[in-house]
Image 1 (tube, rainbow over the protein chains, first blue to last red):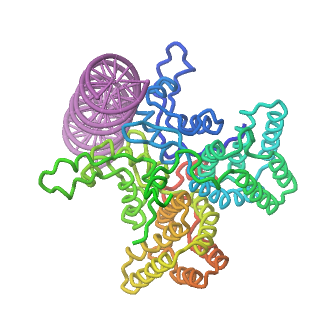
Image 2: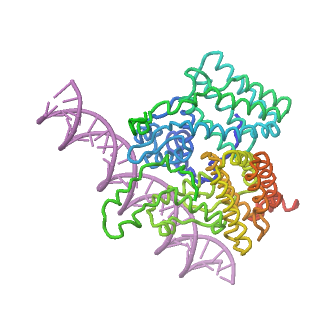
Image 3: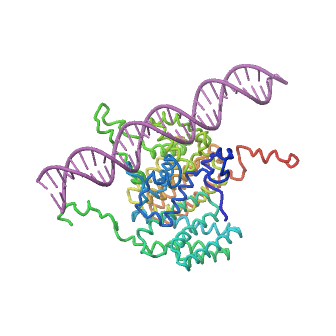
Length: 256
Length: 256
DNA sequence: ATTGAAGACATTGTTAACAATCCTGTCAAC
DNA sequence: GTTGACAGGATTGTTAACAATGTCTTCAAT
């Protein structure tokens, strides 16, 4: 599958003491689910738009879903909040974030700073196997589009960008990209035209071509334009699409 | 002081229920210390090099230091670990991170992707007050150097970079910059020549000049060269400066 | 019929006790 | 004297009970 073993290292430990007692079902289900796995799963559900902005993530439901204790869920939610993928409201619970227009601009500004560089580095460093993985991924994207698998198409579009960060071989930038791609899904869910897919895979195909010709500068340029293109197709002009600004609306009735 | 009110929003709540009971010491100490405050304090202590790599951060000590319960400390440590500023070893505790050569390269690669863009945006967007704050900051840097306040000089050098991110007005990039600057302090502590300061303030001064002439491209270029300069002055060639690779050392005695 | 209050219920936040693991110092054996 | 085992203490990890807050339903009053 091609994956770089990163993260998880700094929260090491978690030795399988359970794997020792070789009872029934020796192999399966002995695996403990770690916080990062939960975080990763929720990231992907957000990317899939299976968890739209504002969705409540109740602790008990998550405990049941992942089959873990409340403490672990709580830690996972804290990590998700620190990435601004969810919002933690005191005594009210966790909700999938609803990025504001300002936050949306910030996310894309950060992506424009990071991802063109990532694309350039990825082209410089990608191994032949990495490029093969990328081509396979592109094929899957096309297939999802052909067969109208909307959810798969969205997920694969996002994963294309994180895959680039993996090929660039930089764990820090990969982590940042995952966060930004996930938040982008929320942004597209709020400000995107309904029914439109976030990424044209034409652009993705062009980037893969840049890999084949090892043209790093070209990949960088395409990625920049690609991100610009995505942002341009958002409705970021509307001020506070939902949740009208009541304060501004009703202060000094004379001035409205 | 000029500060942008960001972060903390998404972990909102924490209403002062204690402030209600107006007993003695009505005003002070009613403030509860939040996780982010603890994280921020530890960030700064790491930047100051008061917490060198490998320092153990025991829960009980931190509880006493911050005057909070263990749960809050535990959450803070998790957040710090998710930023890779500390390492969490199961059943052993939290230790200030000791970045590897690979991680060091990754951090500076990320900074090179982010901070030149931040510098450009900051020049484009800085208000006159923001520029004044920047000039004051530069003065403080010079003062610290003149009076040989090494610790202050180091801290101010790092804060210059986060201040740039504040002037750029992008909360996402500000958060990333804080993380990267903090980790850079650890990296300089490990791989830097002893006694040398991490940033030349000549570069910082040149960047401030670019603000005055509103030359955003120049600021971007200087920042890029500045970061290159810092990285060049590190000993990243040595493999595992400390913690010798015993495995590689003692396998096949004939080959050593 | 709508509004407001009150109480039951559900969910989140905190604390404290307990369990598990690791570190350290002592002591016996060789 | 060095090495290994063992026990005690200290630290971390987990669980469960409890407290606090929010939410929802019911019901009465206007």
